[in-house]
Length: 112
Length: 111
Image: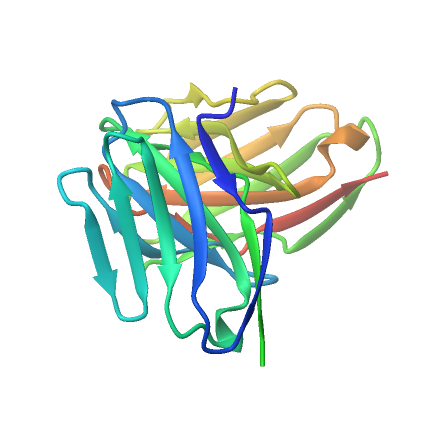
């Protein structure tokens, strides 16, 4: 049973547009929700993360929106650029051992 | 900067061979992880370790074992490689709860 469900599987956005990736979870004990960005041939790298005590976190063009009651969180990329083309993974974790549950990934293609 | 290195970027092995994947981190992190990445399945946790000589099974431990003799080094072992273990293997480390830092990955092909 997948603990974190991510959609869409792939996304094509025009340069300057908004990219939106959604994730949903079931376990209310999760207390850390990161988004990772992965370029081809590289390992994933942390993009932005949120804890459930806030509903939104913004870092530059990247924003996480968090809906605790709906058990959903999403990544918004404003003014999407071709350099944002990558695979994005959401994740959720809880507890001290930091075990992450990853979504299935979204391959984003930003067309010039 | 945290650096997580993996011993090989690409590896080709034969069915039945014993395979060792090595991971080293240089930031004195207590937690280390091994994932495999497959298209459409995301990253799935194989094993993790929260201290030297300690290990915990992840979601897909079957066919794998691990070793952590030193804090900075975490090894993944495929006792008898099979074709369904062809995948990208990613190592990560972290301190406490929070960001995991990933290595570049090892693409393993089992023929």
